[in-house]
Image (tube, rainbow, N blue to C red):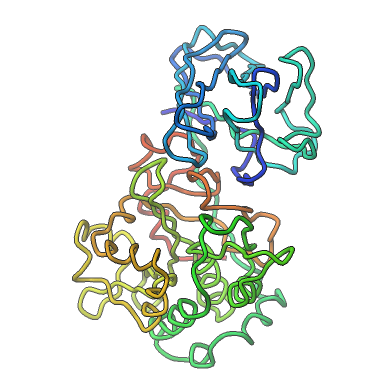
Length: 409
């Protein structure tokens, strides 16, 4: 087995990171135990151009092989092997820079909001360092998304799921916004379909390719900002698949239906991800998969399918996917229309994870600020244990028992 070492939760803000040059260097301190095997360094970073100079990296003053630039213009995980003899028990220092004099080479992803981060920046080529007034605008304290996996040790078990406090007044407020047909008692799958259709028809999917200001994981705010296409500071907000999924999870809990987020991806460390939801059906004794972004549920006959059952049908989902009336609204968006053209091929469904927290209204401070604009990075994601080797930059993995367990409070 192995263990991941990190000091952040992956709650990065993509348009506020750390630019590195030959003068401006970034440093990360990690406390590590002794190791006898090659370790893996993971850094979430973005090259400005495909012909940018390589990202230079050192550990404890020993320079490692530089990281080549990427063709994708988003923050991706970059892997650098580290010989065991370069690491030491206790404090280990990792530094990053590149051979440009302007901020046109590489940026490191950063999670702001830390009171005493173990990340530092230098403006004089590494002679002096500070862990305050960081980021390219010199205004924040944060941790760089830099992690190390050692062969020794074991990752902890995934955290227990967290649900909304049923007494939270935000749930009662949200309940007033929901379609009356969904509020009434009835067959659970019918009520979920009503919610999925309503959400898919409520606003235009707006991705990070055309807006940069993410809506928070607050269902009422998502509905308002999505409908008006106006958010914080009067700018157009990002309200995309994440927000359809989050709104469904909160809406279901307002109705007393357990629900959680389901996060999918086709290519690990890629750009073909998707954000959906699962709802607990007591009648079927399983989590039922639903995609409220495009108003899709999946059935075998009249039996609604779980996510694992959907994955078992890959690569052809055409015989099990059932789109609802909300799909037509989404097809008006050319990007989603293109997305739907390949939907039944299941390219986004190859790898699954679940967000262990579903208490977005009770604990908004625990929600990510910009999920979906970079390669997946949040440590709150629990991945399928079968995929442990292809998601080594994450700490939590669950088996079938974890994913299939009935919700408990």
